[in-house]
Length: 121
Image (cartoon, rainbow, N blue to C red; front, side):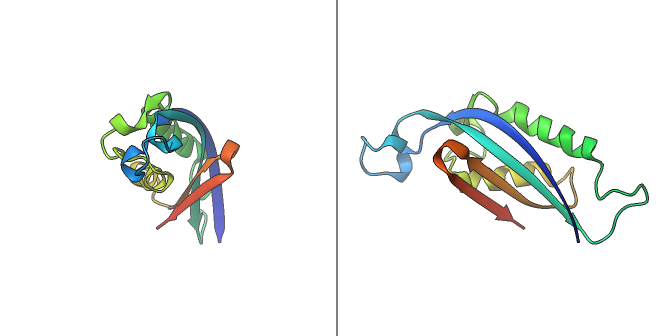
């Protein structure tokens, strides 16, 4: 089994007020994070050019997602109205999968908080 991993970062703000009862809970207020994302591709065999997937294609897909999310208020993005880490991982997977047929998983991290979510299809 071959596995490729591509990492990118973005900065964004969100709030999760709908998830908490206490209006003073930190998540109820708008706040920002540095996010780290891994696109993980897997396959049993290499293609005729000797790679699983052309990394330039992976990079372009990541760049497109980065442009959609970086320095944005995630709650305003259609499909991310309640932007938990779990929903963010699924959102990124669904955006990347059409361009990356061997995409197997997406990991989203908030390194400063030690939090990580993995979505695997």
